[in-house]
Length: 545
Ligand code: VG1
Ligand code: CO
Image (tube, rainbow, N blue to C red; front, side, top):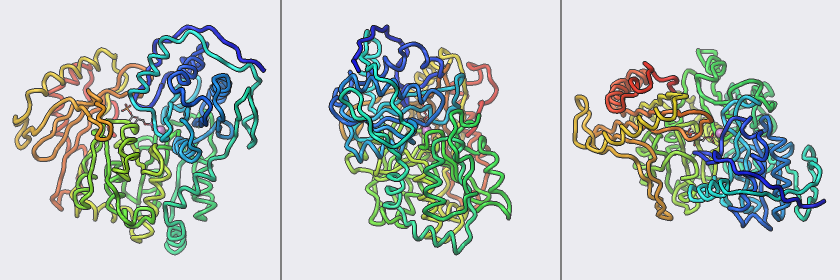
């Protein structure tokens, strides 16, 4: 075995976005592309040398190749021990858990989350810090600089390591420990939730549920939890064998994609409870019979029902949501007299609040929910939290949500996406809006819609005072309606404009309306301000979530 120094040329496009570096798989397959990024990572995070690093991915196409390259580069860079998921697979929440449990210096997670997989689809790499959460912007900026100047990397010429079985190998001076994270993850879940209570409720009520792993990473975790531990029948699992192309599915858990599951939860004979997770296991979708629980409402309901969960029965320290997430959780936080923080989009911004013990639960509108035991969002965590609430309150999902709205009001919420725009068009819309919103405060944009505040959101982290500027245009009205829009930071081509619309209704007679009807007025206001149809040449959003 020897360590080789390989000359290389930098790629200019290795700038991490909202959730790491995400590109077409073919981009990652270019010569030295993964190697450059891995070497730049070890240059940027010198603490990884001599320490433990966790490595794994969602098992998508090219995961296996990228893993071997990263292992050999880690060995050549003096990493002490690398903990790798068997077959190179770890869900994102499990990777976060392993980093924390093993006091690793950080981790490298290979995933493009909910984006389809395959040679013509997407791939991604994300670097996580020692707290188990995605690296902060200051660090990813340094990483990008390192990528732009790299001229060589170190790599061991050792043969590929067998990562298909649980064992320990040595490359150069680095131990390679192949682990199965399902056991550790299941233990963590049992520490949080009332498994006995859930199990007996399932038995006594005959709860009919299905979990859709979408042929992605959560299958084995779900089998352990739902079938082995909660003793649900095997057929409660759908698409539970991970595939490297996700079986051609688009593993994005939301009603417009999981139409099969939505149908199964409809009508008098429908399922009582249904859920799905995304490619890397950090997102969740929750359905009850005849109801889809919007992720924003989900966060609020979980917060309001904290007392049903053993780990949280003594109370929550606080909650946090992103600017793009509805303020439903804020209303609960106010009622519970706990703080609620508003952060930019991307889970990394919750990290400091969680580290400082200022918040317990966090959530994003993009089907992300999580808590302080790790530093990533966690799909199965949300599913178990819901099961725990259903079991403790002995109530169907729809009743839990309806009662919640009656008590706190309903934050009607929806997102309009304009996908695959030329980058210049996206930038132009944002620049125009930035200019226009500057003078909006105090104006009545349509009857009853007086602007309380309008700006381009800049976030000052309450823990380290770091500032993240230009995090989205927001218009907040005196009647609590809100409009936010921003460009996506996860796409692999072009630009995606996301427009978030929120309208708060307290009136008990108006809790059962169509979301689209309720937010229609706000959608018109956005058009007037940002001229989206005119600038994009489209007449409506490509997707409405
Ligand atoms: C999207 C979501 C954001 C989420 C991010 C990563 O980012 O809006 O809330 O944190 O994806 O999710 P953007 O920049 O495209 O809006 V995942 O499941 O990829 O880790
Ligand atoms: Co994901």
